[in-house]
Length: 187
Ligand code: PRP
Ligand code: MN
Ligand code: MG
Image: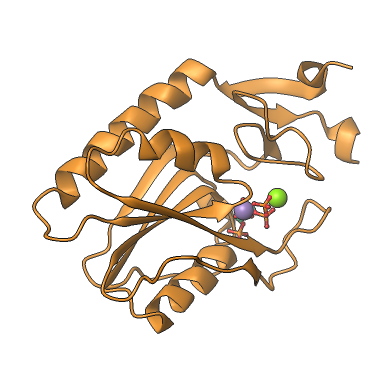
């Protein structure tokens, strides 16, 4: 079985992702290098595991790296709108400049939940770095905290996309590119 056969179209190749991740890392390095405290990178598991690992290596500052797990999709293709934190932070983010790292922003409910959570944990600013932004599907408005910035890799069309961390029913995360899943796979 070849996972590639389940993909209708590649949207961003491994090379294109890698170049964009480098640019995002450089931008973050530039924006945070004058600060006295290096940012705390918080990857949103599971989807952002590859992006977090690659981005972290392109930020040339003494960052910390941590993960938090939020889930709202289960095995379906539509968010149930009720994200739950199922794996908490290891590090204390009080007084820190948190950068939440996401593979994709869709309805916005996951980020909205996480930003509120970082606020209650005392983060002094909350930024977001999302590889993909499906802005056409936004339902929940979220506001960054303090001097927080919004970084986005690519504007994503409204298709069911998988790869580079993104799953369908927990599969396809290990594809090195982002592509559109053939509808017959999930219908
Ligand atoms: C996906 C994706 C984002 C979130 C975006 O995670 O990785 O975290 O949904 O959707 P939203 O903007 O509508 O909230 P999912 O809940 O599928 O968990 P996963 O990362 O483990 O795949
Ligand atoms: Mn996720
Ligand atoms: Mg998922």
